[in-house]
Length: 233
Image 1 (cartoon, rainbow, N blue to C red):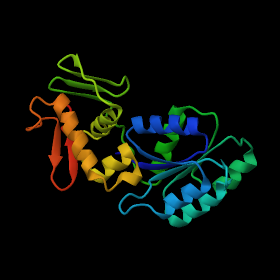
Image 2: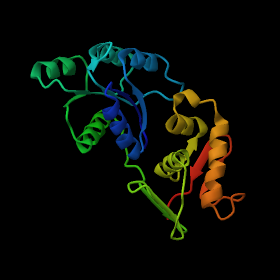
Image 3: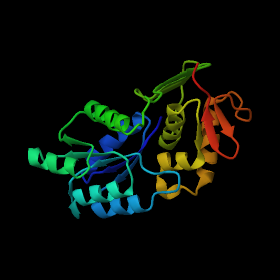
Image 4: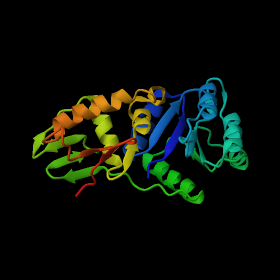
């Protein structure tokens, strides 16, 4: 199951690396580089798209992350994992007592972070299932770890946006994914109303991977919802 994560981190390179790693696992990641941006995202969560988990850095350019923790705790029960360079025991105790579910000291491995996320979600009764990273069906092979796509052995060339869209569908193979979810995950939350983007790019994908784009076999239309990648064989 894909979860929706708000990553609050002002280090652009670290934020980008974490977002890529979490996205590879199939999670939807929204990033904020400041306390004010994070608070705005928390206050304006789209209907039906509440955050399932927060990753919170403390040393933000416009304030301490602890004030966001207080808001998150008042807003709901989604787990908050603090990711901080502050190693002091008193800092950990203070944040855990204030409502944080876990405290991870930088630097840390992505594997450890993913394990902490699974534990935090499990404690809240929310189980995150591994994403589909290798898709195989009827000659189509998609390897998201290697970023390789072949059809009957021939390499398929995709634009970056086409690849991200296909990857998002593959990670939820067998499940319908709404237009809004695709727009949020591939283009960003500011594009939620641009449903023509999904139709345009799905059309381009079908032209490259379907034997008959007019009668698609891999990417199916879910009328009134969005699209579904046929489950792998």
